Image 1 (cartoon, rainbow over the protein chains, first blue to last red):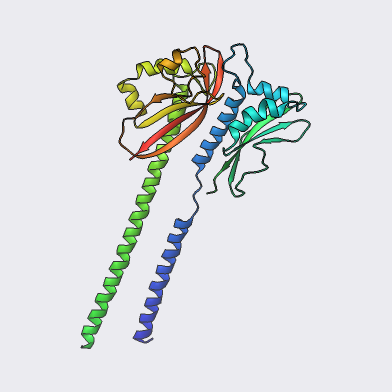
Image 2 (image 1 turned 120 degrees about the horizontal axis):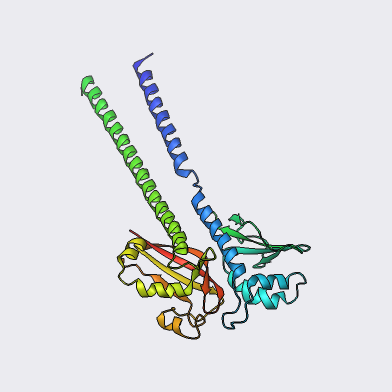
Length: 153
Length: 170
């Protein structure tokens, strides 16, 4: 082999080493990071909100009025009477509009009710975190749960 | 130029290019290392704030006692009377602002101070408590929010609140 050929092979080896190093570096730079801690924190926050919500009193002025949001939900949903007027419009829409949460109320029989009234997260590529449903009434069975639409990562 | 001189120059060029490549490599490694250290630092600050949130809710100074995730409004008021220049709390809360905001039922947008808490209209007359205010000049900050239950013992009622922890970072 001539000296010139050996030098060209040497140059090619160096270029290959550099290209491989660059590919490995790019792999680590562009690798998407999964923040497990943030997901867990959001999940705890959503569950905490749900548990707190159902025990919240609806009136802070009248001492004798001990109605909670849970009571209103139970009273409202079996027949769907005055739901809009009593709980959706004055309470739940106020709390959940303009938030990244979707409150889902499931009743048996009947389809789920979502507040705000949207089928899914506004951003279809958003990560969704669902809380475990809380049973607020055994018969007829009624559960509530929260879906959190996190911004896409 | 003689052949020996050309080969000598070639060797010098090869060494120069190798040195530049190694130098760029070292800079890249250092920047990645420093970036990952900053990310770890932020992660630990977040963990610290999450632990602090749970600690505040469980602290005898604030808790309702019976329920988890519940803060007693009267305890906050009592705490506000004792916090001034207390070195224990200064060391515990460090560079953090801690506030509790009433989200529902909606109340008047005003701070709940000693005066508001003692008034008959409480808690309708105010909507947030300042639990601790940091004395820091740091500008970089992050807010960590946790929903909590605010128990009002005078009415034996519960409101929905948000515990805001503002962490100041260097």
